[in-house]
Image (tube, rainbow, N blue to C red; front, side, top):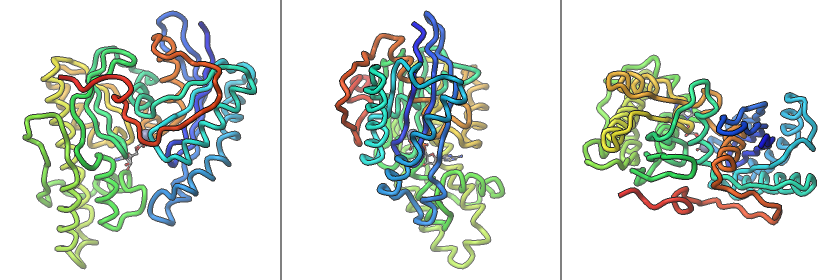
Length: 351
Ligand code: KG4
Ligand code: ZN
């Protein structure tokens, strides 16, 4: 097969479109072109994502982006063999835009469509990097909405090892940043500020660090950050970088320790990090150091593909089709799944 796949991502505040060519035989699919429009500037005035504005902006962006990737790959629309879209989880209205456009395009072209789970996109995005992983591996999936450790034995073979019982790691970054008065999107802004701060300046909790299992909890951290910010009062401004660095250190330490525990527990020697928080430099540095010490290989998506994008959706579709675990069809009536657990559809929780 030499399939050309158009992927559309519109689950939150980024519109992403990409073209992926499925490899021959066991060869990995190749990214031909991808284009992204981030809505950060639009939502910034509101301090967070406004769902209705997000949906409307996806409508404006998706077709121009599709034209841009086709132009970049120098391919006509009718060269597309399959259209993939993010079916969930995410904002319902935003998802409906991508699903609607994907199904309309596919119907016009008379090619099959495939709805993709957003997290599977993140999970498989490191296969687009210059240093792709090999199965099996432990995956640390850290996004704005999810924090999970998984055992991944192949495409579609995902076993949940542990997950957050409350806030996600990205949420912990975002909410802490907001409490410190930093602008949306909090995570990257907090991380940037942390570069100038002392990570040991404030003692913040490392929830569930010694819980013995692979679950996470980050809700208490933001409360601790709020308490510190209140205590500092007018002095917050001058200690902001230290508080940011201490917050980042707490989140990163828990993520690193639990990832190492998952590796030890499974006996696997390969770790894949995916999702927006995977762009965090401190997390990468700490994981690199800890894994090097233990002879574990770590794989990341390319930095620009850590956060939401269309390439990971096209890639997940290509890999699912190639592995024979997805069967795209020409049924164009679509639905979206705003709340959708990857494991609900795929696998039971690991013993
Ligand atoms: O995967 P993603 O783009 O969207 C979701 O599927 O949620 O992840 C977005 C999350 C946000 O919480 C954002 O603050 C966080 O990833 N993030 C970061 C960094 N870049 C993005 N967190 C910490 N450091 C970063 N450099
Ligand atoms: Zn995401």
